[in-house]
Amino acid sequence: MTTTSSTSSTSTTSATSSSSATAKLLASLGSSTIDSSGLAEQLSAAQYAARIDAVTAKQNKITTQISDASTLKSMLSSLASSLGTRVREGDLAVTPTITNSAVATVSKGTFAGSGTSTLEVTQLAKGQTLVSPTLASAASAVGSGTFTLRFGTVASGAFTADASRSQVDITLTSSDTLTTLAQKINAAGAGVSAYVATGSGGAQLVIKGADGAANGFQIETTPADGDTTLSTFAWTPASDATRLKSTATDAAYTLDGVARTSTSNTITDAAPGLTLKLTGTNAGSPTTIGFSDPSSAIQTAMTDLVDALNQVVSTLTTDTDATSGSLNNNAGARSLRQTLTTLASKVVMPNAAAGQPSTLSDLGLKINRDGTFSLDTDVLSKTLAKSPDGVSAMFTNGLYGVYATFDGISRSVASTADPGSLGGVIAALNTKQTTLATQLSDLQTKQETLRTQLVTRYAALATAVSSSQSTLTFLTNQITAWNNKSS
Image 1 (tube, rainbow, N blue to C red):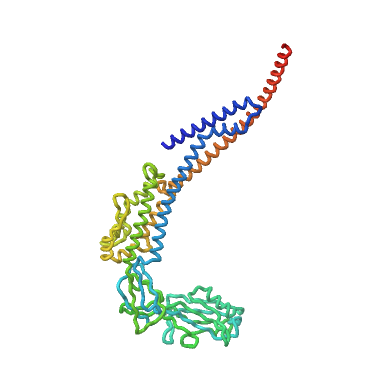
Image 2 (image 1 turned 135 degrees about the vertical axis):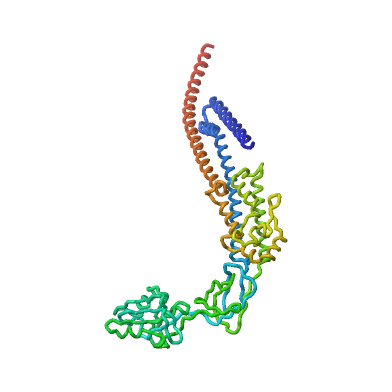
């Protein structure tokens, strides 16, 4: 009905404009001049006013639809983003804590942990550190031949080779120095690193291996042409103990009374829900590891989630009002409404074990008859008491869970590939806007063309009228003169 009224109003305006222009033209015929420019402007505007107004009205309507659909899309995106930030950085999941932070740092593992554990670290994982004999400077020649790294275990003054690892041979020439030897060791990619350290006595090559007892190494040399310089770099555990600055060892620790070892100080599978990074020892003084209780934070998060969802519902209800809603009968709005209607029963944890919470309704989310949401705190409290680990698992940053569900909804709503989503609707509306802009430009061009043509025609008319008026004046004067003579 609005469109009909607008069209009627536009037609009346057009007719009025045209009538006014015609009356002005007729009035001008009796004057000495004609406002050809003004008349052309009025008549060309009257000719195209209705069509231009119709296109403009469509543009305004689509602009409102795009704005309202974009607002809904943005609200869902913000909801998912805020939830993701809270899951990653907040306190919604079970988080391990440690009493003595000098011994280790603790972080969340794949699963949720619970209870308390004791940790005693007696040895950290280390890599072997070996130094070369002292030379005058980093530019000193090291001799030509083959420099060989052989890997295995160094213990009790003996070396046990690891048959599964190949030796690394580095070829040296007479031009190689302590610096280039370090560079060739690093370039070999053998899991060891080297650099030149210059102290008060001269320069030495420092070679460091990876952590873990199995990453020890010894050095063998094969000098070329009896080059004695390269021979001094050879080393075995029995040859010179002073060159061995650190022996490769495994980490040794006791967790929950069970003695264990690790080739690395970072232990990702220490216990369910627990990753350890050992940083010190505490032999004889075990420290305690515990797990936080996120129940209160989860209840707050669910309350905030319900509030955010109700803001979306309120906006959606206004936009889809049967009489005034800009998105009434809009495919994207209908799709979003359907998604929200089934949200409480949606399975967000398809990998949950039997008896574990798997839907948002298990967390107390309820949808009311009017489409709004509410939180059943009794249901949430019972679920938290029965399965705290299961609830905590729903608030992790993984493939499944509360965040993954809302992130998926946000992405689906924003998808431009689906014509039934808000993103698809916005894309289609933008295309219509482009088409209307072209139509409006064409109409304005045609209007300007007509105006130019009318200006030319009226200018010629003005000339003709002026000529007629001159002739009329001449005849009038002649008749007057004749009448005067007759009298």
